[in-house]
Length: 353
Image (cartoon, rainbow, N blue to C red; front, top):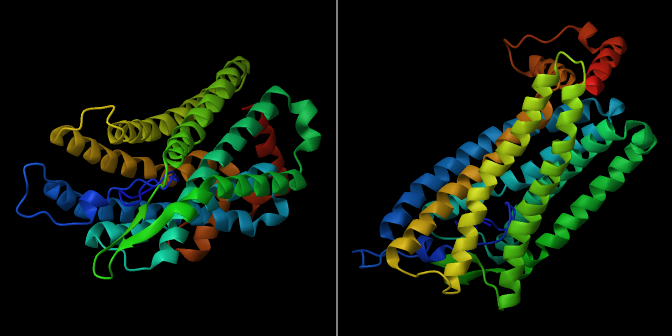
């Protein structure tokens, strides 16, 4: 995952990519096939972007967690999914300060266990985030398309079982990150890298990143929303167009942020197997593309709270009420905005839209 600095420890959201060859050693004066300029660029670009993503994502997802916990007595299945989605993003985001430091100094000073642990958290946070998005997509599909038949099954107990299953699945998928990630080098210049010991594990990383982390989730979103949108369009709701635009944006954001990185990662794998040309320019441009597209993909953690939570009026009111107590100058909605009758009306509007 982020071996751009273990970049996509497959977390990314995903697998660990070993870019230590251009993070871990200085090459000056530059050789004919030098990574010196790329290393200098990465040492500035990655810490800056990682820091911004961490701050914005931590604030947004932290607010989601606080709101759901504060109103846990009225928690629904959707709230449980939102809570776990935000928690997944937080687990992923908490690894970024370590990788920001690593990319800046080209040295891993935190030891072998922290290297393995952070790599595993990076993978688990990414996969659980993707899996919870898939779960929310399927939940929306069955609620809109088969509401009468599934209403009795959408209980808090079902939400707890679903969440536990997704976290266990994410940990199982991320287990190779803990097994194969290790610290190499000496105390003065060490690298935290994913050292695959055979081709089978390399193929697994590619499979997990591209199939489990992108193709299957994207396929589920496209299939479900392609059936949901025509149903919403037929409904006589004044807010139907907003709902349709929101659904399209969900798929578009996920697609455009993750596909470029996965393509670059796949090309990097092909080049490592000498299937693609191994020229200096092509290799350096590919590494640069991985660094840029990876960081952009990580911004999805910042957008999740906006896409999945803040678009709901009830959740927005609760968030403003909480912020009104913490931040001076923010107007807190009146108590009547949170009355049971208001929530019932909001619930009716949500189902119709």
